[in-house]
Length: 339
Image (cartoon, rainbow, N blue to C red; front, side, top):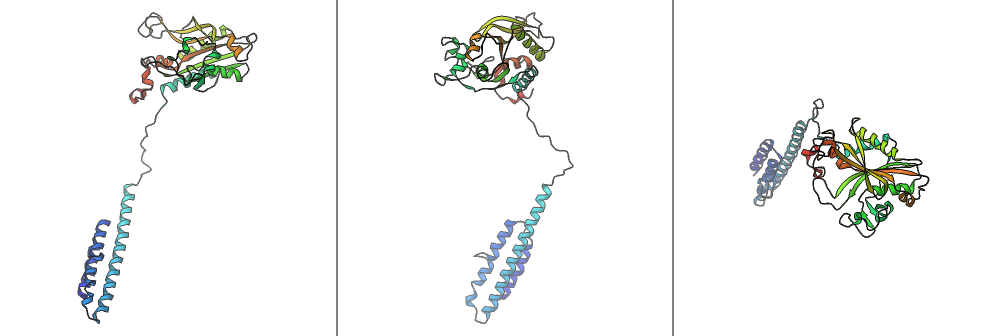
């Protein structure tokens, strides 16, 4: 039995030294020290030994167990160290190598043009003001001189939450709130999302963006309105741009007008882009209605003002020759990468 124990010790030392990984090492531990291992098998036979042999065998068995456990611990530490060295070697980073450029996003075409429009108007002394998208009926309609029976109040055009609360159909309510809080002179633009119950197609969306402007002060005239918007168009489309004002009607301005820009493609002769008209409509404008000024607590006998509003999507579509508004909202990377 003593010879068998010595043989186990020598065999374990050799096999443990050749173990290649922790799995093989654990299998060898079970082979020698497990409940059915070789050392345990010998120890079960100690009952058949004489009283004189038993202490000698027991002492040697303990030495063998301690030796094997020590060898297992040493080999385990060596395997872990080797594994760490290999991992560090594989994960080594050469800081002198050129890095890989990470793909970066960029501004959406709507955001790019909006920032450009802000810069143009801020350069003319306007400040940017925002307001709530969930609006009261009073600010969205009544304060803008839009009576109860006006078509714009039809529930087919407006998203009503209840009789008094709705999703704003325009950013004009921001102008009302500004006139209530601030005394003239006022010179603001109010960009933001607006909502209308429109079917989705190439030129319509239930969600789109508007930019509206307001100027109120003493002695403001239609000439100031025309000069401001002509300067805006030239800054946006170039000094060669030609504009015209057509009479129109808006409940909150009087007189009112539509601003057209001569077609960039045909120079006014008529083409597919301008639908044969030679002009492209870009915004509505007019002098602020005296009743609107009065509602906001501004004396129309002392002050006057002008207002204008445009759809951001249409400005961007004309800037980049985009013929379908849906492209702005579909998040197609193939489309967005062009900008």
